[in-house]
Image (tube, rainbow, N blue to C red):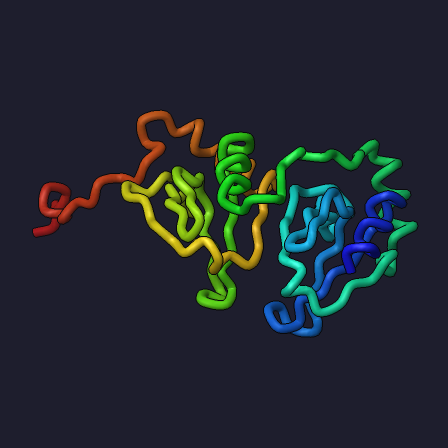
Length: 198
C-alpha cells in the first residue's frame, strides 16, 4: 500500500480511501497524498464542491481499500486548476504522533481528533496543550466557538483520524477571536438574579 500511495503522491493524482470497519462500505475520503510512512498517510482533502479543504491524517491499519486514481481524478484536478487551487504541503512530521499533535496545534490553532472505536459519533476539537507517549491534554472549543473552562485528557492511541486546516476549524477560530472577553464558556448562572417572573 505504501508504494501505491507514494505513486499517487509523485503523480499528483487524487486517491479514494475506504475504512470499511470505521466508516462503513459507502463512505470514503478523496484527496491528494502529501506524505505517508508505514503508519500514517497525510491527505489534502477535496470536498463535495471540488475545493481543497484542509488536511486529514489516517492510519494505514484502518484502511480497507483505496483507489488510485480516484474515479473523478481528471475532473477534480481540472476544476482545481481552473480555480487556481494548488496542493500545499503543511510540512508536518508523521514520525511521532505526540509531536505531530503539538505541531499542528501550534501551527494551525485547532485540531479535530476522532476516536471512532470508543466514540463512533463524536469528535473533539481544540488545541493540544501536552502530549506524551500514552496520552494528551486537550483544551476544547465548543460548537458555539467558545473555549471550555477545563481541559480534558485522552489516550493517545485511541485516535483514529486527525483533521486540521479546514473551513470549519477556520470558522471556529474566526468567531472565537471576534468574541474578545467572551471567548471562553459563559459562567453558569442559577437564574435567580434574572428571574423577573411573578
